[in-house]
Image 1 (tube, one colour):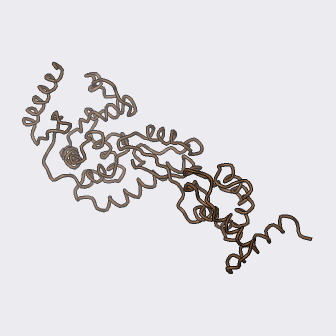
Image 2 (spheres, one colour; image 1 turned 90 degrees about the vertical axis):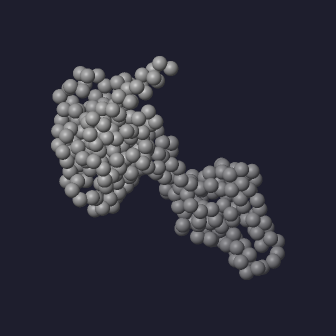
Image 3 (cartoon, one colour; image 1 turned 60 degrees about the vertical axis):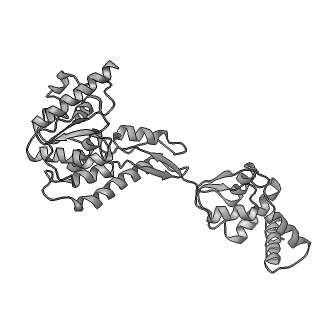
Length: 335
């Protein structure tokens, strides 16, 4: 004698066969009605299918979420068995439309794309800042335990699903960084004053921190490339700040004693060449700019009061630009 569960399965299977064959009668009509009847939920609802969930557990979740009624849990279970949903059950969050029937719910769970969530790491953030952003992203699991080197994350917006680990997201950021570097490095201009992709990232991180104007990046990159070629010091304020604060805002101007500090390995007013590491995570445009800088002879730049910079190829011209900027600063203080 079959168990009650087996008997229930074969009853629903028989019902589905009768329906598929176009059979009439009370049993087929009732089954069709219950499978096709609109759900009672009047709004979109999200159901989270976790790895390892059984079809029975899922039916219970749907009932708890008010997507199907408790009396229809078994019908959903047997319908899922008969239609292959049990074999194709995928982990993820799924959006069930308002009023979806059992048939429609099963179709969503079988065929729809899982709900994605997003975390954005802006360009120019340090690794510590980027990991803090990932650490605060909702519905990810675990703490961040991977430790990328400075500059080894690609600033971007990354999609993730509920239940993924934070480490998995960070590892995607690292993979994206190295994939981009593999793409751009072979396309670099000839005669650049650095030999490795790692050095390119160090310089790109400086470009990233020096300007927030995307169109300026190739020209800012050209200034630093030209200075390196002439064995001039980079004299970049953001590198000094990184050596003092680890990339956090300084909150004030750089002091003369800090400019003169020869013990800061990131003080590009005192060291020759590049600092020992990147000072932030550069984005695609800054990396591309360093590998293919603008064709200029510029050696200097200073703020121009509009959010951008005035560039110069000679110290005399640069000093005029600096004097103009100081005048703008004084006028702003007097307002």
